[in-house]
Image (cartoon, rainbow, N blue to C red; front, side):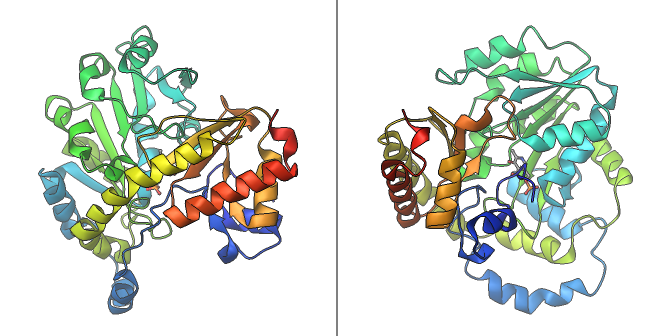
Length: 366
Ligand SMILES: Cc1ncc(COP(=O)(O)O)c(C=O)c1O
């Protein structure tokens, strides 16, 4: 089996571990460990009949629920089969841009979507050796943006977990022909509304915000995301795609997920302490450098290849971490881990320490 480009490929990992996919503790996909919400199993049983009929091709109820969540008009919402589907239409919409700028390292699917539609793209490398500031981002973008530039920007950024107050750069960003802001991980913050580019939508027809429900609610297999943008653009995307991109169960579930305030509050309660404990624990392991993250995952640099560590963790501990080979700027000396429950995070820390002190992946540290 070839090495996957995305986290969460449990079949690939299980074949390396000589185990079953369900035996693995997955730190490679950045899914909320508190999810899915506990009521989901019953709900699915009660609502499986949603699978019998075709879903409403206009997704009225779902769009209304999402619009209510964002205090906007439902015509400004387009649900998608995960954020990934919407990134495909975003890529097609970049067709009249001379080139599309990405921040490197970049989520691999951007390149997949842009390459599929033949739109030229270029990564601007973020300096990973110093704290992420807005000034650094501004200096990177300023000389590159022209009237025919497209920009696909991710906030918080995967894989670093950096979060920028992008509204402060809006004067610069709006010089672009089209800006797609992928905010797939923003819901992990209780103050998401303060960081989103949403308020800029009122001033610009050239901005699209993409959000995902799969990570926050741990329903990656169900697939559900949405775009927020001017209705004319979303109408065009709707014409391009098949009429029932979002399945009936996902369409019915979306409003229930968005209404689950208790689950949202529990997630916001869990993350900050769990993240700092995991980051501190990793930072105390000799040879590892942890980048400060505002998201539900951590990017870690090692002094040597992490591939032996990844293999030992799988084979000896049934733990999967995300290697970063699919991020061109990173290569084999970086790994990314999701923040999970405190007990699971401790399990990961113990396993990494054991593997490294046993010397089974000893070539990794100096
Ligand atoms: C930055 C980013 N955007 C979008 C997606 C796709 O999310 P979805 O599961 O909603 O398609 C991912 C998935 O890993 C991601 O990391």
